[in-house]
Length: 309
Image 1 (cartoon, rainbow, N blue to C red):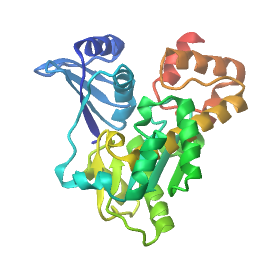
Image 2: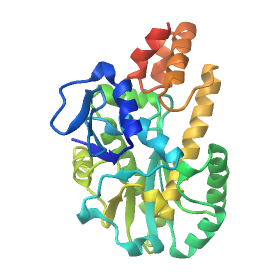
Image 3: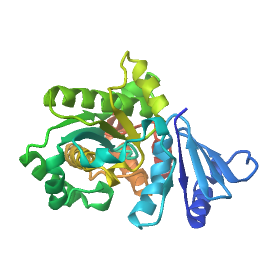
């Protein structure tokens, strides 16, 4: 079962307890609260650690972790399986980095991008300002993605549009499996592009345990590529992952703009109350069926929006 663990502040945990007050369940020993949603079971412990586990733990985790990233508070992610931890030398050598965007957003698709960065291109990309996309504005990300393309950095981008996302979800695919398959296919495409170029490894920004990732792709008769590593917050260490993250985010922003124009209503990013109000507006003006084409309809926001109808 996919899971992630974060060390969060006392204030954040208290806010979480209030947020999930309607979903609270039996509290295990040593815990402050436990809540069960359609996406995950959330358990907050007195130590400050919060465990998110279930079909889509990242959907719930991102609601709280992103806030801390933006306010520059410290986050302690779950440790990566040591067998798949990248060697320190990988960050300065030629490698592929893969990341995604849109997984915690109610509206819009999931975008996954991986980039192949040669050792000699690392200083150039750093000079351009390529770094963890969470520390960049969407406007800056859009401009950086154009520069990356202009510099002919090899990359592969896949977009899982909402119609397909919702179809797969109804078939029983978890968001974790969708992401694993997107990463796997994007990397496969990029490996074909770069051919016999020097490659010292492949680094995926970790969203689930490597063993779970392997099981996901195995169900579709796929296997892990050689020299594949996993690491949480990898975009903070690897320019290749940061490059992939910027391309994925820029694509997500572009897709959101296209959807907003198509529907005629500015779509909000994230999964906040503002999103709930936007959902209600869409349902009132265009009908609930429209959500199939622009949203991840299994998110709890679909039901929460009904309070505004």
